[in-house]
Image (cartoon, rainbow, N blue to C red):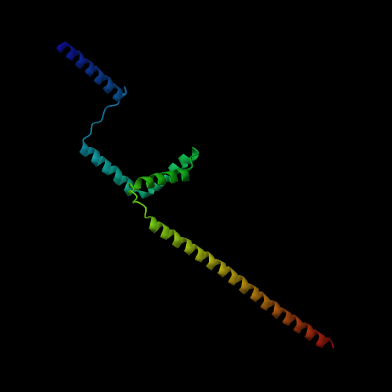
Amino acid sequence: MEGGTKAGLAELVQDTDKLVADLDGGQDLPRVVRTTRQMITDGDQLRSRVSEDACSREQADVQAAILLGSQDFDLLELSHRIEKLLTAQSFGPLESIQPTDIDGFLRNERQSALTSAIIEHLKNTHDEVDTFILRAQQERWEEQRRKVLSSIEFSADTTND
């Protein structure tokens, strides 16, 4: 049993070495080891640089727009998609729907139907009144026009005599 365990451990060590080699990627770059405190400090420094120079952020946005635009990306569509995703993620789960109150629903539908009928009738009445007023105004203008024309004719006749 002990020999099988040693063989199993040897296989584990080999597998571990393979995984470490895969992680290193066979590159000749040194590995950087940082503590959590160092990572937090570096992150704070980077964030302060970005927030200090708002102008460079706008300039970076312009450069990004130029770069993406040259690659035939629709920037407006892309920004709308991102906004939709952010909006969709901001909504929490919806509460469960309560059982429907049939009496309340029917009452609401009846009131909505009555209200829409009243509004429609009010609109029709308003249109009829507007039409009536317009006709009356046109008739008055027509009557005044006739009076003016007849007075002009009368004065022209008296002047010629």
